Length: 88
Image 1 (cartoon, one colour):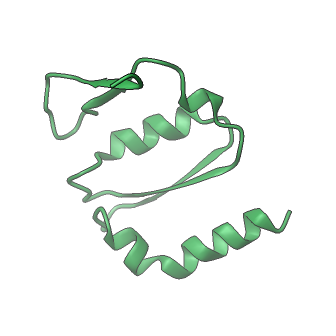
Image 2 (cartoon, one colour):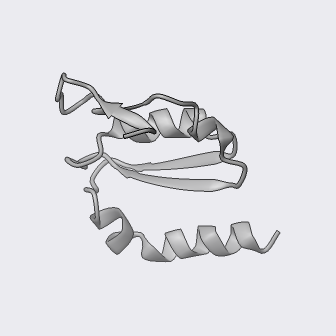
């Protein structure tokens, strides 16, 4: 893939996707990231990595949530954040 490569470690606590290019740093719109601490598909380290690279990113971390449960259980908060960010 031209944007990234898979690392060979396969560790659950380390990202398996490492961008080749600085594509995250090129994002020029506000980004809201929601990360579950029990996410087995996208490790919390990936959310922190993305938030540290995207210029106008905010990260909300939910220790008891999984990959999809963040959206299911926090849908009102997600929509509220989105509405607040688009009204400016």
